[in-house]
Image 1 (cartoon, rainbow, N blue to C red):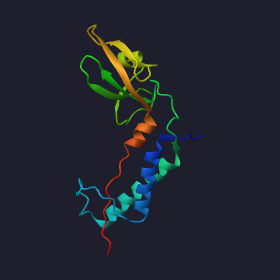
Image 2: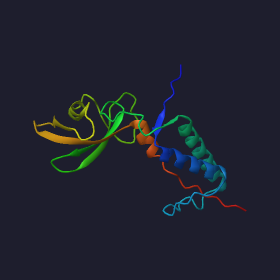
Image 3: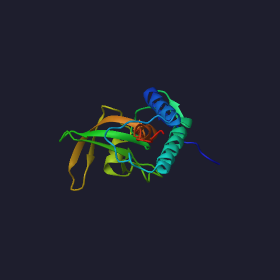
Image 4: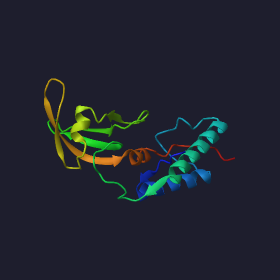
Length: 166
């Protein structure tokens, strides 16, 4: 039995990915002035990269759920949380642990960690106190909670694909 992982995303992200897909399919170049590294790449490699990106976007769009309010912003396993350490003002973003989180593009805190146990159940704006080694206690404020899938979809950025038309 196969389980389909749905990707939650905003209408803006969905539209952006559709536009990128259309550009790739029509063979228009996607300009990125910061990246000229691929400019002299072999045409075959550019074509493979383009086809790979098309497949990647198609997979994301096929499994996408577009709705701004498809989740409850509560700190629970599978959510990417942004917290502010109130004593320093520093912010940190991490995935609240879940099994199979290997390869996540963010740091992962287990539910059994001091931070994970303290922040679980919080909503944006809630403050929690947790203990760190040595008995020190820290106050944190939950700033944002989004499903990992939504976080991952937002981190998919257009990649430059350049080719020469002859």
